[in-house]
Amino acid sequence: MNLIIDIGNTVIKMAVFDTDDRMIDILYDSEAVASKWQDFASKYALCHGIISSVVILSEEIKSFVDSLAIPILYMNAEIPIPVTNLYKTPKTLGCDRIAGVVGANEIKPNSDLLIIDAGTCITYDFIDSENCYHGGNISPGLDMRFKALHQFTGKLPLVASDEESLLLGEDTQTAIRAGIWRGIEFEIEGYVRSLKHKYPELFVFLTGGNTFSFDDSIKSIIFADRFLVLKGLNRILNFNNGRI
Image (cartoon, rainbow, N blue to C red):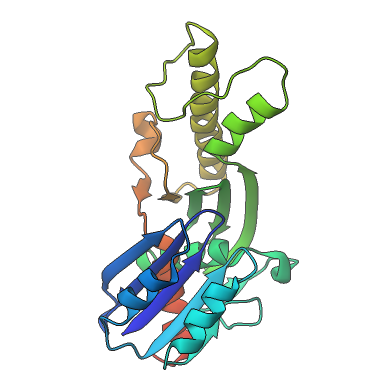
């Protein structure tokens, strides 16, 4: 079994994949409680592990990894991956981004794919039908936009992001909420339409913690998969262990 660890800016995710590449368990931790990780890992007969992190590893994580009696692969730009990476500065490319691309490519190989990860930031990444990753864009995420409007203005309030969003705001709070939610939705639709013009068979993967509403022409080519990055990391781990 494989232990997959994905450390983001706000949440640590740990998952276990069996030998048939099925994810059989997952742990989310936003408080960094090492005892929870130990309890989670001890339930399974683990053989290999991989860590991807967008932050510097904490002493808690290092201590936890040292306690595991399995070989651990640390995801970085030098690790071989099962797609061609055309990014000009691979050492600056987020491990979560390339893992999401690898995960999408495994599910739908030899296809033109746009991978959208709506997390702390919103990332857009493209891989073509020849399995070549070209790059992508980075945009502020949902919570970041709400906080920015409050922090960089004198009077705009910090608005809750999880309430109903109107098409047009009826007061300051609903105007902020509608502006941010609709702005992200229109942004995503713009990327999809622009790439689909060049790549008519484009297929879109949406991952991350946020759910958006799109018109039917966009919705029909979007596949939501919350575990895309974890699946990609599992594939990279298998690739480096000679399984694929």
